[in-house]
Amino acid sequence: MKLESFIQYSNEVLAARNNNKPIVALESTIISHGMPYPQNVETAKVVEQIIRDHGAVPATIAIINGKIKIGLTEDEIEFLAKSDEIEKASRRDLPYLLMKKKNGATTVAATMICAHLANIEVFVTGGIGGVHREAETTMDISADLQELAKTNVAVVCAGAKSILDIGLTLEYLETHGVPVLGYGTKTLPAFYSRTSAFEVDYQVDSPSEVAQMIDTKWGLGLDGGIVIANPVPDEAELSPEFIDQIIHQALLEAKDNHISGKETTPFLLDKVKELTKGQSLVTNIALVKNNAKVGSQIAVQLHDLKK
Image 1 (tube, rainbow, N blue to C red):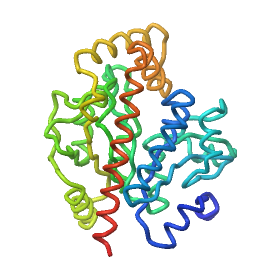
Image 2 (cartoon, rainbow, N blue to C red):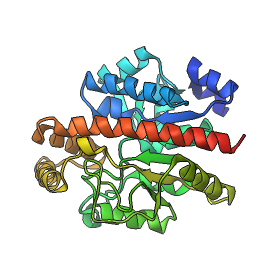
Image 3 (tube, rainbow, N blue to C red):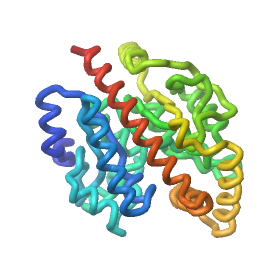
């Protein structure tokens, strides 16, 4: 089958393609598995509007009835937010979900694949997956990292999720030649917190610098993604000491409940939300909005470089 038979564009994204406007990809796992209703729908809509307000066009990506949807209607966002028939879709799941005409919310890895198929170069998310704690025995490593190693999409995020082993995640990315840029920071943000104990590869201070880095990397034929780590706004940050205690407790409960594989991240994020009495959700929403602003600015600059 031809690629075109698997992909459907929203009217807004199709118009952007036809009129050569910058487009920013958005994932859908955050809608189906990352946030509760109705905050998931509210956040998805606000994030899309932030991207429009900064001169780009949003393309939220999902699998619906066996089609890769590049850009969603409001009804489709509601469906993803409320339905219990939405599977978590990573690289390995895409062929099966399309073949069986199922519904799936795309992870970072799957969103990167679909964005690349649609020639979208900038993707905004909350935080990337990575090497899980105790991976030396569980071998639990997110497919996001392999996707970053080979797929030409720049990912704007608030660093790696704090539930992960951030040091090993950075080592993995270094091994595969993935540049980790700190947006206005020398240290890697830790999702809920602005800083961590780890340094990024390079600090960049403007959307223009990031766009030039992206253009140079791919212009050299160096395939693979780029991580643009953008710290959560000051006012929404949770202190590293506080969140570390919460994550430690959540990890213990995951182990007690024999949670593993792709169920681990949703369980831990939900448990962190519960243990922080909702504070982590507020922070999550704030960082995604901030990433949308920066990501759209980068997409506009990258688009202008290629005129």
